Image (cartoon, rainbow, N blue to C red):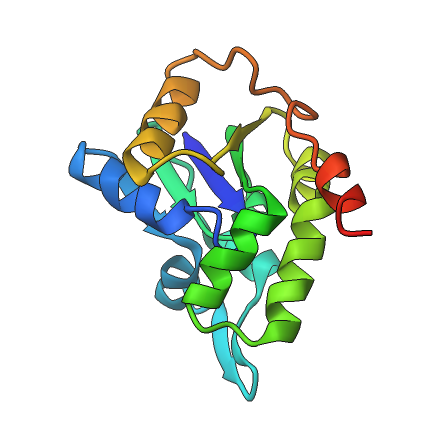
Length: 170
């Protein structure tokens, strides 16, 4: 069973994945999988992932495998969890990582317009979203684990809405 953990950069995917791994889950980063299966290549702008090739090479598993990454929702899956984050909080997180201003803005806008959620909804049958804005990594990991175990109350697509946050920008 492939469980996808996706979201805009800075929403907490990697940190939650590390915690889930310590709890015994098989957590894989989409970039690592792409490299393992020969579906990645280096470009001047970083690693490029051939999603179609990775899709064809990724074996199905009866065990739960959590695939983490902001492109993960484009891979075959049984369950997709989209981490969300208030764009203003996202700004702080990305600036703390040293992202250039144009990348900070680009990711804030992507989050504000639900870009990854919409893409996930178009390519996945079972999609849930978790607002990670006010959760620490343990809280995010617990919320993910709850969804995996069938407790997804209040986590359906559309439950997170940043429209008021965007209106406050003007």
